[in-house]
Structure formats: C-alpha cells, structure tokens
Amino acid sequence: MSQQLTVIGTGVIGNGWIARALARGWDVVAFDPAEGAAERTRSFVANAWPSLEKLGLAEGADPARLTFVASLEEAVAGADLVQENVPERLELKREILAAIDAAAAPGTIVGSSTSGFKPSDLQRDCTWVPGRVIVAHPFNPVYLLPLVELVGGEATEPHQIERAQALYQDLAMRPLVVRREIEGHIADRLMEALWREALHLVNDGVATTEEIDAAVVYGCGLRWSLMGTFLTFHLAGGEQGMRHMLEQFGPALKLPWTKLEAPELTDELIDKVVEGCEYQAADRPVAELDRRRDDFLVELLDLVQKYWPEAEGLEGRI
Image 1 (cartoon, helix red, strand yellow):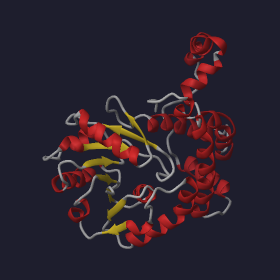
Image 2 (tube, helix red, strand yellow):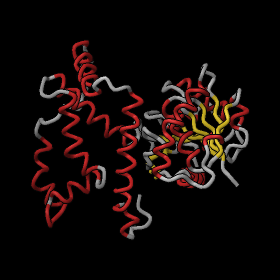
Image 3 (cartoon, one colour):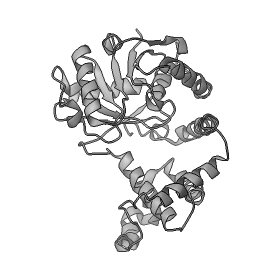
Image 4 (cartoon, rainbow, N blue to C red):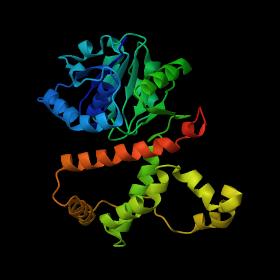
C-alpha cells in the first residue's frame, strides 16, 4: 500500500518535498492557494526529475501521482505525513498548523519545515493531537539532500518521533533527532555562524564573495562532505586524536579570530554581496545553476555513500 505525503505550501522547499516523495513512489497531495502554484510545481518537478532518475527511482515513481486540491481539509485527508512549508512567520505557521491538526487523522504526523522556530511554539494553538506537530527541517534541494532535523515539542511523545523517523527514512532521508528544542536547531546554527563571519570578511574588505566561497569549495567543504567538523579536527590531532588537537590548538579559541555577531547590513554591504554573487553567477539563470548543482550532488552522493558508516559495517549511526 502506497503512502501519502500532503504538502501545504509549494515554494522551493515544498516543491522539493513533492519531488522527493514522487521519486520514492509515494502519492502526493498538495494545497497552495497562490495563483499558478500547480503549474510552477509541475515545472519544478520536471526540472528535478532527470537528477532523481540518475540517483535512482523507487518502484512506482511517477510525477503523475501528484494531485492539487482546493482546500487544506481535502489535502490532509488520508495523509500519512503532512509537511507544512508556509512562510517563516510564527503566527501564520501556528494558524496553519492548528488547522492541519484539527483536520488530519490522529495518527498522521505533521512536520514543519521551519528553519528556526521551536516545536513547542508551533504546537501552541493545536488542540487535538498537538504532540504529532514537530519540526522536520530539510535542506535545499530537498529532493537530493538527505538530512532532516526532527525536533519534538513539550507535547510530543517518543512514539510520535519514532513514527516520524520511520516515515522520513521511507523517503530515503537521514533523520537527525535533536535532543532538545532550540531556535535554529543544529545545522542552521552552524551555517549561520559561518554566514556571519563571511559577511564580516566582505564588509571589512578582506575577501570577495567568490574568494570566500572558494575557501569552502576547495578546502574545508571537501572534508566536511564526509567527516564533518569534529572528526576532521580529530584527525588534525595525529595519532592522539582530538585530545592532542585540543591541547595544541585549544588556546587559539581565546584569540579574536572570529566575530560571531553579525555586521550591520548597510546598503554598501548589501551591494557588495549582491554584486559579488551576480558576478559569480555570470549571467546564468537560477534554473541553470540549479541543474548544475544537482548534477554535481548526484555524482557526489554516489561517491560519498560508498564511505558512509553503514558501508563500513557501522550500523545504527546517522
């Protein structure tokens, strides 16, 4: 029996969920009152489908299994999983999530794609089964990148998180259960720190946007795609690992190397960042850059999967 994903809100993230679920052989029902939403979504899926084909489609995968409906209530009927993707405004999300909670069957899991809000705040207006409303934060492009951060709120019970884990795993994702709720979760807090430092480097005239991206692309980014921050530093300690690394380089943490507080977004800084990114894009439309990124990610995923924990026999690791 096929599973059903319901997507509420079909921007870039919502459409990414749709493409991923279709590629996994799920039925997808979408609701978005914006004019032209259905046409934009079908175009998005068509653009993403070649990459999904290269990555490998599940049995029954078919873009024709997408249905748009005229109301939220109709959309959530029969859903195994509902994914909310409305704009990042807390009051709006509370309103939509409360409507979903009131209309969806009690066993349905409701995930919010919020990048920053805590689930307890999102659950506040839900009165039927508030615990099943959780944070399920993905990364763009959702149809290729496997990480989804799962965060339960005050009303969430362990079985609801376990049910969510199973559903997202069936979508070929890697659920990361965040141990306690915090604004920004895990990955966005890390990316935000790098983003703030990058803005300071541009603002202070140290580097252009292209030079900063090059520092990541040709250096630390290559290591991070396999090992992440901690294991990378563990190797930097030589045979003694992380303990020696901290003994040797730990004192540098007291040096004023970074400025974690964001710089003021002056018009001058905004112009520098925008002009730098437009120079990097070199007049290529975003759709073309999307396809280039997807082609790269498909090849990279094919490579790194050979080195992920389960390939080494380390089962049960993230």
